[in-house]
Image (cartoon, rainbow, N blue to C red; front, side, top):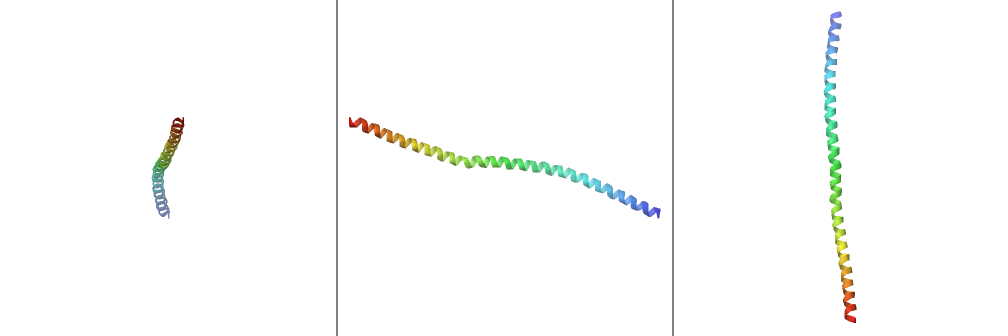
Length: 89
């Protein structure tokens, strides 16, 4: 009976050793996953910033176009008024 118990204890010790190794491997894998997730998170943040910049560009272009149009209209009206005033006298 003691031989059977010794064999069972030896088997349990082997199983515990295997579990320790697996646990260690899982810890290493978890560290790698954390690093990858941090990298992906940083990439997503960078992509969001770039997308925001890209979506703002057309709005800025329209603002510039509208400002130029308004300035052109004001210049046209002022030059017409000046021309009218100078030719009237």
